[in-house]
Length: 139
Image 1 (cartoon, rainbow, N blue to C red):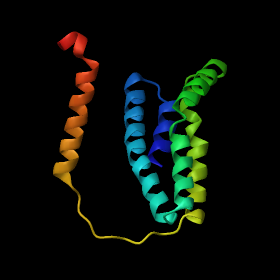
Image 2 (cartoon, helix red, strand yellow):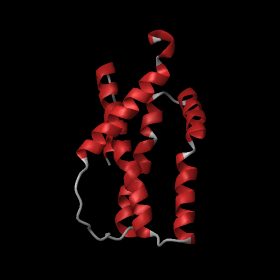
Image 3 (cartoon, rainbow, N blue to C red):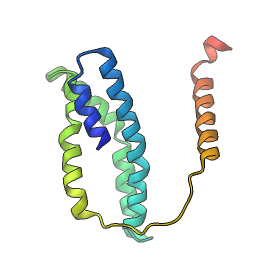
């Protein structure tokens, strides 16, 4: 829902700061949604063919980035850049309305948050991306 609300806010942004803040919120919402979707697949579908099909659908939808860029360009050309953000709102609302009727509550499991692991992975990925994007300027 955070991604949907941030998309709406970004579409209505009247300043650069508002747009950047909305895009940051979209990033946080997307970062929450992606692992949540994978968790829902593993808890909803039993191991085997059904789970494999569900993972295949998830992978196909996740890999549609090139199509999204093309459709975003067309949408921007036909309407305005704001509609690239607004298009997420009805999809997000539909998911929010349908999800409680389709998904069952999964069993809870005790666990703990691995903060050292989270910080080391985040730091490692940050350094990797920095190293790959700045070799020409930083040697």
